[in-house]
Every structure is written in structure tokens, then in C-alpha cells.
Image 1 (cartoon, helix red, strand yellow):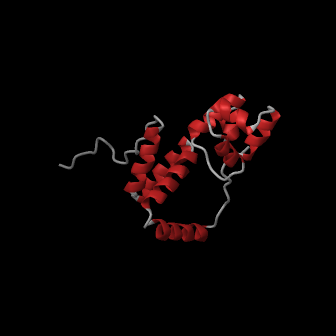
Image 2 (cartoon, one colour):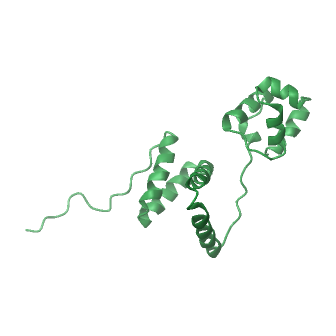
Image 3 (cartoon, rainbow, N blue to C red):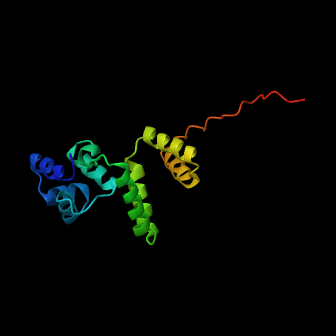
Length: 153
């Protein structure tokens, strides 16, 4: 379900915007804007609404729709993003943060391994930081060198 599902649940509970606002402490205009998809709510506000409506917060959180893209489209998107956001680092950071929050631990770990393979140290540090922020340790890079090499002598 997505943010529009909030209206369905609210009406099923026979609550007005004002009643839900009073119970949650979130302004009615904010709830209305969320229901119509005009804004996104911070996670703590979604949690408050979920508590009041007695539903899991995941029910009120929009799920991103993933569309498969061809490699050439990915390259074009990277180029566009780099040109557009290079002058707007805050927008880039927000976009990256949103993307990282949608990834599972396994996806983060896979991307971290790929970044290691490519030698992309910036991406490695960002992915490792996201794993750390979730209280998880990134898996160590496999050591390709045997510990006990025979010495030439």
C-alpha cells in the first residue's frame, strides 16, 4: 500500500482528518497532503500515524516500483545525474540517502563487493557507513593472499 492507502484506512476507522490529527499530533493539512501524494512524511510521523491507526508502518509507506533498464539507459542516467547534481551536492546526497535506505543488507553488501572489485573507494565508504548506521558490520574483504607464503631462499 502507499500514502493514498492512508485515506482508505482512516475512512475505514471512521476518522476525519481532524480526528487523526488530534490523535497523532500531526497537522491535518500535512496528513491531507500525504494522502494525496503531495508530500512524503518523515519516518517518525509515519510511525505516529501507524500507532494511532493500529497498523504496521510499512502499510503506510510507499514502496518504490523498480523498472528494469537497459545498460545504455543506466549510462545515460548516470551522465544526467552527474551533470545535473554536480552543481547541487545536497540534492545528490539526499537522492543517494533515499536510495541507500531502500536497499536490503544483502543488496548493500553486494554493492560493496562490486565497489571493492572496481576500486571505487568513495562508494565503498558510503556503503560501509550505511551498513554501520544500521548497526551492522560490513563483511570483510576476502584476503586473496595466503598468509604463509613459502620464502625463497
